[in-house]
Image (cartoon, rainbow, N blue to C red):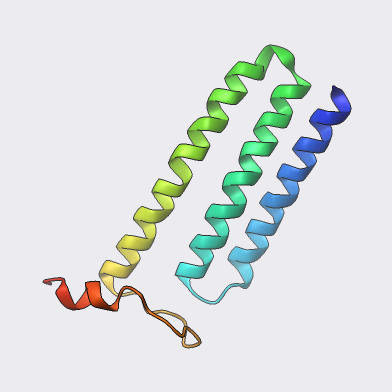
Length: 109
């Protein structure tokens, strides 16, 4: 089981690294939030689950923490993106489609 736990933790760490790389490389806050949310949610879930596999006495605690991360990370990222949109943080100049422009017109400031 130690090998399986190590592999799961390693895959999780790889996803966390790729998410951080995306946050550094992507052009605007909305793309960065997307990279940060998808990669870090899966990466943290796998890393925590792998640690739970490596330490069987922590397994159920690790599962509970991983479920908490899976539930709260996307919600918090959505709140950040919505707040950024609401205060008018601009999209990248290369953005082709702005699906929130209709919401911006209807919003009263």
